[in-house]
Length: 337
Image (cartoon, rainbow, N blue to C red; front, side):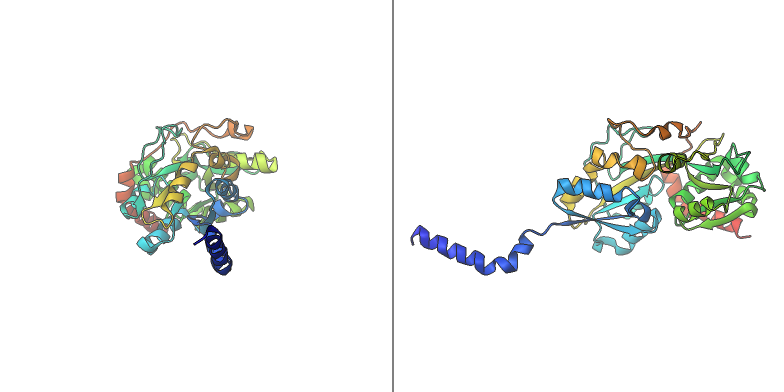
């Protein structure tokens, strides 16, 4: 058969099948990332991260927004091996052991040797993406004598306090561990002393912080970096983090890829992207936490005043995993009497 005849047949085949199959040929894969709602929101870092990664991956990024970090893990556990999640983004230091024990996670191959979190980082399942410390935030214009320790927060019966539920919120879980690291076996008594002047315990960080901003509490559990938001976004300096003389409990937020990820190569690419400028440059003024790698561009000056903890209080991960349920029950029993 002549070459011209072959070309004619090929052209006819393309014309014949092009309308049916060309959209599929050029369709982009979708990377599904389970995260918490504030991360994926219009005011969070999610949209910029999505745009930055899509420039590199020739894919679509789909954030599945859940109500909390605890909710991310619960959703993945519920769906099991049939989950459509490629990446879980927003677990934290205190949920890592529980997440690993599900058997749903895959090892990553990301070089984390340049991560700058305290103590460095070495973990085969998790890549950190931001970090900070928990603190109680107050309004310096309305609270003339702020607490100077966690014990001040617990024992000052005139101080109106809002914090988050440790069953549904990572800040709430952080406070649970902060209390345990300071009070040890006397934590139940401390919870009982805190209960009478607790305004409410909310499901999420955003609920608690919104109530605080409306003046419904004197202090709210948040982060040492929270005042930077008010300075940068609002030009407001009255919101400050209270120093805790005992030390502060850290939060390191992490990501992991699923063992049965529908798009494993994209998941691997995104895990490496987490430590690159396209992701890390969005952390400070998007998630209002500290990046985990050094960046060429300096952080806004507002972060210079971020409270530097006098001591880093960290309970061993295995101890947290083994006792978390019992400590939650201890909190419940102490606060519902």
